[in-house]
Length: 285
Ligand code: NAD
Image (cartoon, rainbow, N blue to C red):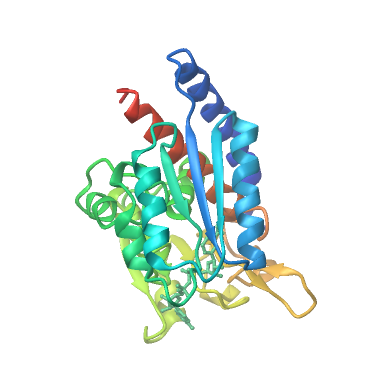
């Protein structure tokens, strides 16, 4: 039997409707959620991401500003801009697009963003609050994964979730969020011995590696939920995930496509974080 498709676009659309409602409620108090996006350099993919974020702001009635800086911008200048944005009341969320040029230390940039405006959820205080289970701005892709599971009616509590990949932006926070939802969590990475054998034990598989079609059908427990975070460009120009989609969909119970799965959720969760930051700034829970 073929797996049920988890439609990231449809779920993201549902969440955007909720964000619109929240935005209208804030408007009654004279507050418009505001997002500042900073791009250093001219990386073509980053330019597209930044444009999409500005467009999402426009669609949802947010205030947005985009700061495009030349790639040779000194780190101090970038930090000064962040400091000004930290102080600006119209801006509730700040996002500095990665990758950054080599001469800029990413950690210095993340640390400089005010914790309550860190809508990427990368600041050590937000990461720490995630780990101890306190309220935090959550990393967008992992937060999107949890929303997809919940809104598809996929049980998490008591299930074995296997996360493949341990990056700070996807793998680790995804594992922490699954743990917070009471899953039993295993984190795999490039040094994991016998990866297929570990994945075979999973009720929920989250693949966040960046290797096309790494996860094969015979790694999947029948009926498991498979969340494919990977975005890989094939030689023919097509996009594919980290999961061998056509074969795995015959074994899994649920599966996310690429594109149209996790991707649309990430930007939507960024908007949700910006609304959350604006609500907090307005004194709402
Ligand atoms: P990363 O390169 O920072 O981390 C990859 C992880 O995979 C590492 O922890 C590494 O240990 C692990 N790994 C590498 N080879 C492995 C192997 N053979 N077996 C097991 N583990 C292995 O990547 P990232 O930033 O976490 O992104 C992962 C993928 O997700 C990329 O394709 C990226 O483009 C995509 N991504 C998608 C979204 C989205 O919105 N859909 C968001 C972020 C990242």
